[in-house]
Length: 114
Length: 116
Image 1 (cartoon, rainbow over the protein chains, first blue to last red):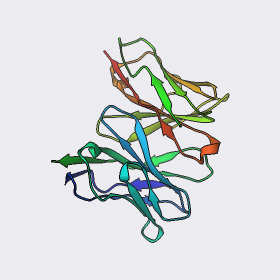
Image 2: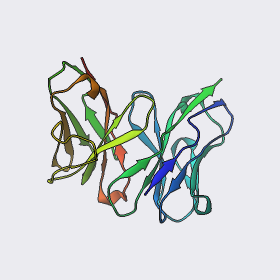
Image 3: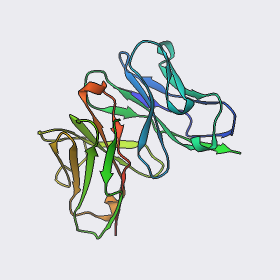
Image 4: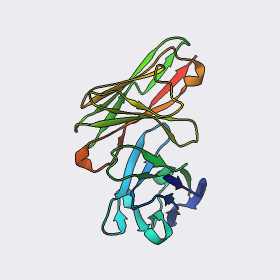
């Protein structure tokens, strides 16, 4: 069965520091991979996605993620964090061509300190 | 592009009443819409999947008679919480996808339901 693990429940970084949020998945083949961000009381905004091809994916707001098949990981990175990046981040896995269910990680809450 | 709206953004109702939440895809046709429930500080829990013109598929443990889902058009799905009780208070989020966008789900802003 598919599953997604985000090992870090909460991360605190200083503004301007680099960021890496971890995501590991369990799936029998290469899944579709997504990162979403959620601000308090808001819906989810798509940051980036990976379907195939180049394993380093660029997203919005300066985020990038790298798919590593050997590690079943899809970690999200940003070289310099801004205070406005404080939010909840969700990694999600979608099974190709099923058209249906996403599997979400439990989320990582990011705090940015000045 | 790929904007999904929800209405209302928040609602307070009395116990025993019914509440309808609308989910609309504004600039694309959504062949499939999803309804999620999110508890504070937790991840999203998929409640049901609806395809336009057909009955919704509910996840295990979700009462289909309590959470009525209608996907009458390619741009609108509704979730009706019938005979709401305080334990139904939650944040409800919809998402939509179309086959032309390669399995990406686009999420609405969510609806905060409080049942008194």
